[in-house]
Amino acid sequence: MEEEKFYHAIEVDHDRCLGCTRCMTKCPTKAIRIRDGKAQIRRDWCVDCGECLKTCPTLAVYVEEDDFRKIFDYPCRVALLPTVFTGQFSKYTTEQEIVGAIRELGFTHVFPVEYSTDMVCREMLRRMESAEEKPVISSFCPAIVRLIQIRFPMLVDNILPVKPPVNASATYYHRVLENRGIPVEDIGIFYISPCAAKIAALKGEEGYTSAIRGVINLDTFYNKVYHVLKNRPKDHVPDCELPPSLTKKEMRWSQTGGESKHFPGRSLAIDGIHNVIDFLERMETTDEVRNVDFLELRACNKSCAGGVLTVANRFLTAERMMKRSQNRDKIPMIYAAEDMDALAWLKQHIAMPPVQPKTKLIYKGTREEVLEKMEQVRNLMRSLPGIDCGACGSPNCRTLAEDIVRNEARINDCILIRNTNKEKEYEHEGK
Amino acid sequence: MVFRYELEGGNFSKAGHASSEIKKTLKQLSVDPRIIKRIVVALYEAEVNVVAHAWKGEVLAEVEANQITLTLRDEGPGIPDIPLAMQEGYSTASPAVRQMGFGAGMGLPNMKKNVDELEIESRVGVGTNVRMVTRFSGE
Image (cartoon, rainbow over all chains, first blue to last red; front, top):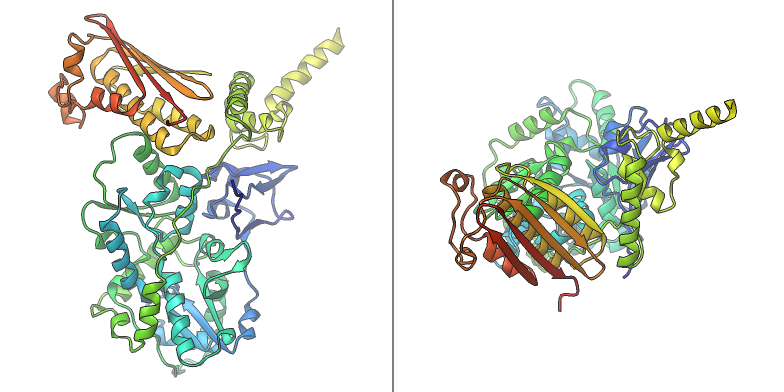
């Protein structure tokens, strides 16, 4: 079997890491171990959800990002901007001011991520009609797609193979710019990302493959934009062209429930990676989840408004996005677009390859060997204390047993066992 | 390798624990996901049967390299007429159980459909033994 690896955007700064075990116990795929007092992430089990980053008390877990100056490698510099970015600002900051500040930072164009949403939605509906496996699952959240590949491989065929809006919009706008006569090598589309998973998904093993040339972390970008806005004179009137405006549906797509309300039948929206895991577990094993047609699953609480790289409070961001989109009910811009060629181009390129399973395998070897290792784990569990303290550097006693069987840990890593052994030694010496 | 799980009559919220654990084990053995799905469906139905009808019981799962043998033993009312119970839609579930969304009379037929071998032994007033075998090769 080919061992295709994921690219990961999450890193641990070992100078800051205290080895406190918080991230290790929070990790939904148990991909973190503390070795030599520092957190280490198992690359093949990580889904880039960012739970570790949210819980780290010393800010040792961080998201890798491209150098901002990289945008100046391109004469045509596009900021692919998600609605959550505008949601970071209160209503007193206008869209005009935000766009003006982005242009001042050096971008020549600003284009909304959710522009292609209506087209994406139609394609999803079309594929849902002919889907063999129900419920169909949206491909929107990349952390969820990876979670399914690793932990729920039986469900990969339920994921609709339609590009999420960020990829679809990049495909569309790249074509628009090409049609305007801009050479391909001059076009630099940069995505402003609210989370690590999007970065990891866009940047494959060999770097960026889609129309996107780089990613800027939303928090970094917010600081830059806010700095420009703060240093402006009070009476400053921004003079710039606004990007195409979005409809209510488009602006709310990245919110919890933003997708699910547009799909027929029983359609559910679930946010928070632990909630999603609980739901998918039930779906796989019991018959409690019956006749559900569509699942919108998001790794973060409050979806993208709660992304690990956002700055503002997620509830306020969500509320602002709702308010800002209130009076926006008109035809989606995409169908009014003059650029019919780019639209046709997007239609042809809106599908993505089907998602492949990448099952998290704890042991290597033949079935006989794996069974034997399971037996060893069971025997080890009899001697381990079962209090799941994490002091050994594995998330719980069971994973320690598995790590021991894989030769990645020793039974003496358990501090309780080590203590008991020491006491025995003392007694022995005393005699 | 043998796994053992206890079942408690009437406790529907716990039904599914054994299926969930067995599912995890089979995933680690890289068993074809479609076969895992079928085993899990059959075991879950069997668990619900014990919980719905019997007083208490247990699941014994013997996992080998090429097959799994699931044995469910319960202490309960037993099944007086097994061929009748095997018919789709036949159910003796109480109205209370049906109200919880169980008891559609599909349990045994569904189990039979999803495993390679199904054997049922039952003594009225004593209990029921169900044995299900599924091979991993899928042929």
